[in-house]
Image (tube, rainbow over all chains, first blue to last red; front, side, top):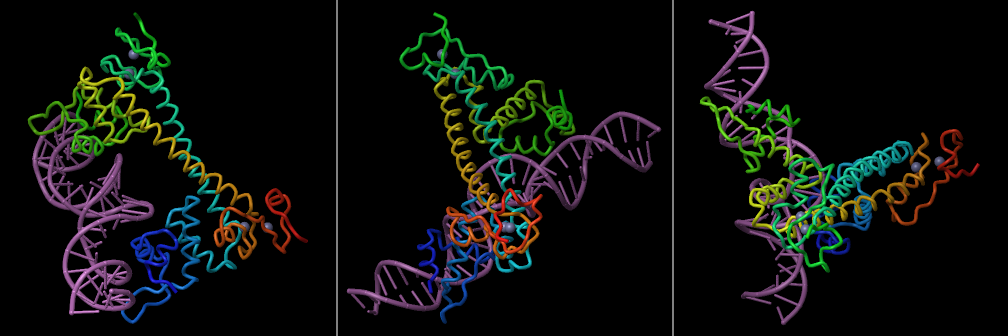
Length: 159
Length: 159
DNA sequence: CTTGACCTTAGATTTAACTCTAAGGTTTAT
DNA sequence: ATAAACCTTAGAGTTAAATCTAAGGTCAAG
Ligand SMILES: [Zn+2]
Ligand SMILES: [Zn+2]
Ligand SMILES: [Zn+2]
Ligand SMILES: [Zn+2]
């Protein structure tokens, strides 16, 4: 039997979060004290841990709601249903990774093209790429001199 | 010279989006007609393309605001400033990728442990993993028979 | 002179998961 | 008996980037 603050501390969430989960139908305390304090049982704690594990693998609260209703009525669901949820989440996560990897290589290419030095950004390759397009990036060629120890690796210089 | 609908179509955004960008200080039309219609110049269109390119590499609108103010005042900024923005975005993107990859492997392990068949979820490995922990997943061992052609690869069976 | 496509505004709604506020009641220890 | 630490509620705020709504004005074609 835990009060809200105890359960929150045990599971490393905020009390706000537990009230939020209750408001959204994910987890309700099994009872209340006479004065209205929430009382969670060990069973409630297990349900919370289920929720947190599902969150840890990437499910949203809406999806976790669905998983919880399956969990409470397993015999009326098939492995196909459960695996379907996991697989569709997996596909979604992989699509997001692909999008972010595109960002990553684009940003890396921009970064590589810029010396990153203290000189004026007037001829900065990054800005030039954003002005025209990000596919053909020219490495910048400042007229100034650089401190070789810092900028040589990225910047091709004239003088 | 474009009206809002023309520019929107040309750049494949909604008119709502252009009004939104205006409200948030990213792009204002250079003028208005007597009746109040927005009029965008080619210069405005270029600025929009800058915005869209920056979005395409992952920058938020707030970051794009910053890039735009640098772009309009290049000589008072250094390459270091611009590259700093790119690199910090890159770090952020890479952190997000790492988080999603963790989700990905966790979900993949869950998926692999489940036969995905039409049988009851009562002994589903996925649910069992969420009930206890997601690190030690047991492959499910149903008492039923499976259609080998569909489930053999993931499911280890008894009988 | 009316239809339809276009344009205007301010403000509300959406999504997700909290996070915070205000105003107050309860428990426990000193 | 009073302070500290806890608890209660309803509801507003946060973040990001739109997207939608309502109520109305403009413009070209037929
Ligand atoms: Zn340089
Ligand atoms: Zn540069
Ligand atoms: Zn099986
Ligand atoms: Zn299963």
